[in-house]
Every structure is written in C-alpha cells, then in structure tokens.
Image 1 (cartoon, rainbow, N blue to C red):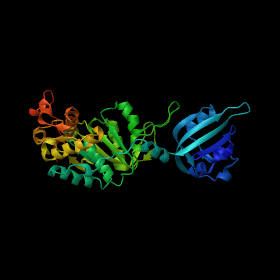
Image 2 (tube, rainbow, N blue to C red; image 1 turned 120 degrees about the vertical axis):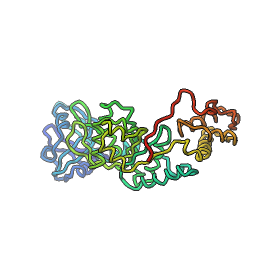
Image 3 (cartoon, rainbow, N blue to C red; image 1 turned 90 degrees about the horizontal axis):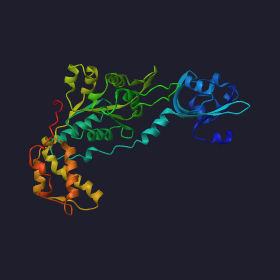
Length: 381
C-alpha cells in the first residue's frame, strides 16, 4: 500500500494507533520541514504539533475532508489543507493524512473562477471623457494602491475595473468580485473574512484570501458592514487579515478596486461609513461620467455592440444614420447598460438585421422613459 502512496502527488503521512509514523512521502516531508527517513518510526506528536481539530478527529476516529489547518513544525507555522482517512480495524486504528499546501489549493480554486477579459483596447476612445478614463485607468493599474470608481448605475464601472486588472502586473492573478449589497452581514462576514475551523465546521477561505496576488473588486462598497470595513482597512493598511473566530494574522496581498454610486463623503459625515477607509480609497478616485456626457462615444459603442451580436446571430447587422442620430440624442438614464440592452432588443426584432428609425422603442423619442428616474451619482472629481 505504501508503494502506491509514494507515487501520489499529494503530501501523505500514515501512523498507527500509538501515533508511530509508518510512512512519510517526500511531498509531506518537504511541506512540514521534516527529514523523511529520519522521521520513520518516531511518534508523530514528537515531530509536529497537530492542530486541535485534527487531534480530536484522531481521538474519535473521525474523517476530515479538505479542512484548512495550521501545523507547528520545526519552529515554523505551516498552513495546509488536509484530508484524514481513518482505517478502523479490530487490531487497532491507523490513519492516513493527505496534505496540500494552502497556496496550491487557492490557485486551484481561483483558476476555476475564470478570468476577466475586458481591456482598455476595447474601450471606445472617440470622445475626450473616455480618453480621460483610459488615461487615469492606466495610471491606476501601475501600483498596488486601492482605487475608487464613482458613477451612476450602468456606466461600466466593472468593465473599467477589469481593464485596470488586465493592465496591471496582477493580470495573471485572480480577479474576485464581491457585490456588497447581495450578502447579509453574517453571511458576508464568513465569505469576506473567512473563518477558523471548529468542532462542527471546516475552516473557510475568505474572498480576500482567494484574491491574494490579484484584484478584489468590491461593488457598491457603501453597503459593506462596519465590522467588514475595519477588516478591509486592515488589509489595505497592514496587508494582513484576521479571520472570524481566529487570532492569527494571515498575510494578504490584494489590489482593492471599489465602486460606489453615492457620495461616500456624506456617509462619512453621517457616521455611516468609516472615515479611515474612505481616506484610503479616496487616494485614487476615478469618476465615470454618465453616457449623456459622452455622446460622441455612442456611435462607436453601438457599432461595437452590433459586431459582438453578429457573432451570436451569425448575420450582418447595420443601423441607419437617422436611427443612430436618435440613439445619440437620447439621454440614456440607464447609461451604457441600457444602451446595450436596447441595441440587442432592436437587433433581434429588426428585419434582416437592418435597424431603422421605426425599429426604435417609442420611449427613445421622449426625454425620459416613464417610471424611470435619473440616478444620483457621487460628486465629481
């Protein structure tokens, strides 16, 4: 059996009921800073300090599956994701432990989350405002400092965030997005900060840890709970994270890109947002103007959207000049998001992919669609 274990890519160690180490492969020895040959036959408790969760599982011959724990070995702390397999036999129990480096598991998890694809090259640069955004976006990509993106709903804050990530040295790293509005405080707490393992539950990697070496995108940061604002500030200022129900500091290296649709300074004055976190985020702020202030970019946005739809529909799409002029004239309270939705809808309903003035929704000929109010943006830069 041990010959089979030796061929595994995982770190593997095995011991009997008395705790005598019977097998230790090279990967496990390297992870725990042990000499594989010299450790054979010694009691495991003399080699490493086992975490409490693992000791309890061994005592009750209970298995563990992909639990993050911390060993102390050779005067060093070692983080690992472990799986414990008890072998219960009449002559006595034995145990097989599989070990993965935490960083290796994080890379595996983040590789499954997908990558972001939007770049500055995909942004229309036909108007001064968009060229300004590209200029400041590229500046924002040069360092590890946090960035705050302000603007109305639908102006493309996440697309700008993706472009900043892909322009930066972190482009090969993870891009983890968190919508601060969608989580209840208690759920977001564990998801955002992680949690230490308990008797009943496995430890949980946080969004901050998953973003390590990459970018953490925080949408609508004004909704972030106060205790999580403190945790985020600790990461920005000190580069460390304290998990919920844990005391040890975990090094975290992330670039924070946050967005807001409101004036955070007003929330600070109302004691509804951390003043220190606001100062940290406000150090590099980019205000994205509404689409009505970027009318010169609308023709390019329309044509780019039609090109992307051509690939989906496998047909040629074109728009008449008078229809395009009406699209430019409309105020677009829903901004880029509304424009893209309208273009897709009229492309589907048009005859032979030819978009005429008659294909446009009736409300585009009024200044504002009924029942939709203009969004309030944060203050200008």
